Length: 358
Image 1 (tube, rainbow, N blue to C red):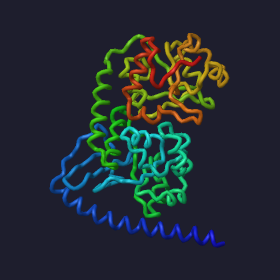
Image 2: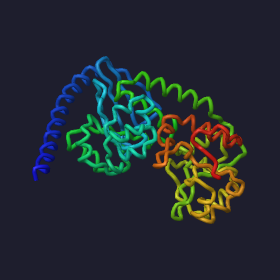
Image 3: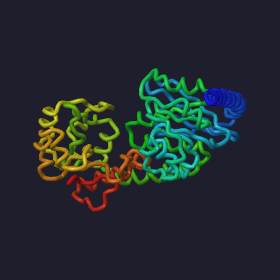
Image 4: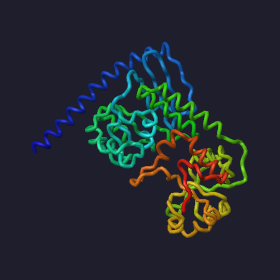
């Protein structure tokens, strides 16, 4: 009984601490806002989903809703955050690129994070599943801010976190269909951690490398993506993240002119009709050709399967299932682009994320 009382007491004290901290930060934010109105400079971004304003006393980030384009999060940062909770491997990927993983006090499934050391995995508090992080674990970690990706309008998780007195940062990088716009979210993480100059430098280097690899010439080799899952094959629309990477790599992609920014749910039969003769098959969610065949026998009817030109993006994975493609791959789309170009050119000797299935 005494243990229960002590636990409840600790939770009450922590909630009171965060409410006091929120009041203090709010006062600082008002001062920052007043100064920003006088001296701010607007840093133009490729992304339509956030903007950064800088003044002498603070950095302000405005995050826009992917559903209504109104501001869903407004952040005025006067000092770097020292204790951060993440809910996605992608968030950790951004922080790792900036050398800031030591600021992470909690994340969802740390065992599934590629860029964390074994020691970090042992000390970082596990928040459970990303779509429903454990609120008691968040309180226990005592973060100054929780980074969330909201995948649906009306998601109750942000309100639950804020009810604890802890601010939420909306990281909606997943809504970006443009690879460089998605990578540019590293600038938000730079603002949160006091590494803005470093983040700008990284993004500029990524942008230049990506543009140098981009081609406007569509080649002859055709491409197929993904695989069937429970009878449905989700194929990238022409304006999706992968669809634009295919275009920039010069791949002959049958759905390149499809304007959808979402994946297209198709039957296996429809995909066979449209892609049976595709030269290469990428993003296959399997490790071996036998596994592909066991999932659906129709997979063996594709020419890419028959010629052994099937690739996954799991080269940089751990036994736990952690995959660096979902971490550094978001920061470095130029590496994915280089992999695609090499695959299309038949040069698989220096692939970074991709690897051929055996």
